[in-house]
Length: 314
Image (cartoon, rainbow, N blue to C red; front, side):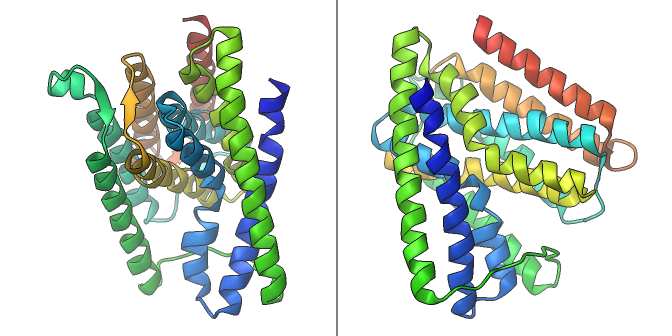
């Protein structure tokens, strides 16, 4: 267990080094700041999930592959946004979020449908196939095109600080960041399997709890700091963007590497993920004031605590 937890240190640290120095290198290469913000920085917080999933997919650990993505998305909404809303009510003023939140909800619907071959097509086994992985990647491409068009239209409101370094230093640190990510990701996947075996716990549960929460620490830090600084749009935008990235890109890429087998018990997690997305949609877009209040944030946290209790008891 300690070895598993220790794997998060190089994973998170490596992600930070990679994002900051990739941004610096991109700036040196005269790539526009808005492009850096929408790509390298915008999706940088999901790098830990990406690395862990690549290792899990290569080794055929479908429970970790799917559990990490779905667990991270559930924690992002119910845990991170819940905590952030308790700190400061999350009022939405940016109209672009009205598109991204429905798209995040759509991602929950899509993965639930793709992962239910046994129910929809009466197949013996449910899985997210390579073809379906490609479909998810196509959804991600549409999202990227949307962001680029938004940037060109002047709708991008990100404000990022890039500390420029020399090209040589940036390259060396990018390589160092990648090595740390690889080391951390390998340790986590290896340890998660061993912990599950030694404790007699399903790998799915380990992935949905320890692994997904650990890989979501960058999102937690970003959103909590944004809430403390009374910048709710960053707090929500960070989570919504991460959830879209997790399903359409990370799960899509994982399925292309190795089809993801879905066990029947995973449907509970997929439904909770769908409900979490629905709650976010209703609270922000259909509720009064276009916001997540402290009370609603409390509902998120209680719901997440109940879900964790269910996973550990069931």
